[in-house]
Image (cartoon, rainbow, N blue to C red; front, top):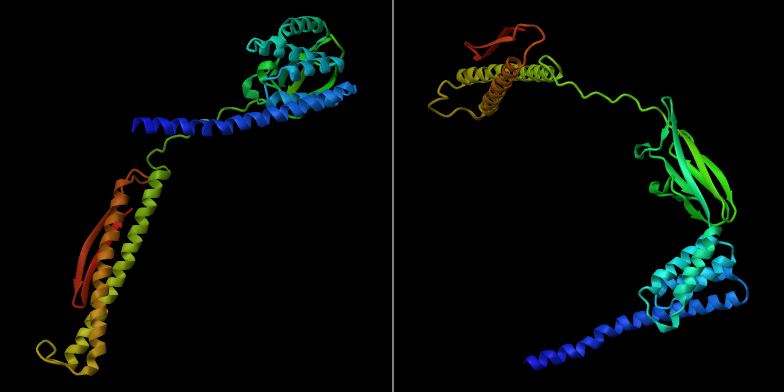
Length: 336
């Protein structure tokens, strides 16, 4: 059984490795094609068109260092000394992990080229000054000012640091102040320059104070008192409705007694069905509305009693039952 498993693993392993090998070969082949095209352009003296092809070839495959060396040599021929020196230094680092004998003398070539180009590299230092009603000061991270060099944002850590630049004219722009500010700078080989931009920013306003906590008699207690009055109103309306329902019930009961004296012990004419239905409906309504009235009054009184009034006296509410020959209900009295 173990032999069978090992046999299957050995058979599957080449299948798993093959796609990776093919993918690597495809990238290497594409990189070689780009390198060849770049070499043809360089032979014709068109280094400007050859450099992008060499860069793409180097991105696809790090095995061949020829693309990187051609980039360094072409950039120098184009007068872009900072870019050329960066490529030579990158080649030096790549040679540290590549022991191919054909690159044996390249490390010394890269070192010599980097030394030769150093005096030709132009350098620029970018400084930002912030001005407000309080005066001028250095830029801080809270200012949210963005610095762009030829449209590309510059890392804030690189401000006030000498930066290698190729000779030519470029644009430095600062955004985030009252209005954007910018300067155009022209550098020649080996020159150094400092670009200072002054950005106008508004003076920070006072820090808003924290909201004051609510005190008795403020909006919190006022809301509770309002809810209490609403509950009392609902309870009062329900009490009135319950009273009306009791009156209707008593009227239906009187009509039933007059038309059918034996209504409690014997049958009544069918013509009294509407009277009986009216009385039953009124009874149900009186029960429901009476319960609503009690709840509304209870909640309202509780809210008014627990929340202090605007004056020093608490609301005084009294509920008293009442009854009459036609029914009963609740009587609400008080002073607020």
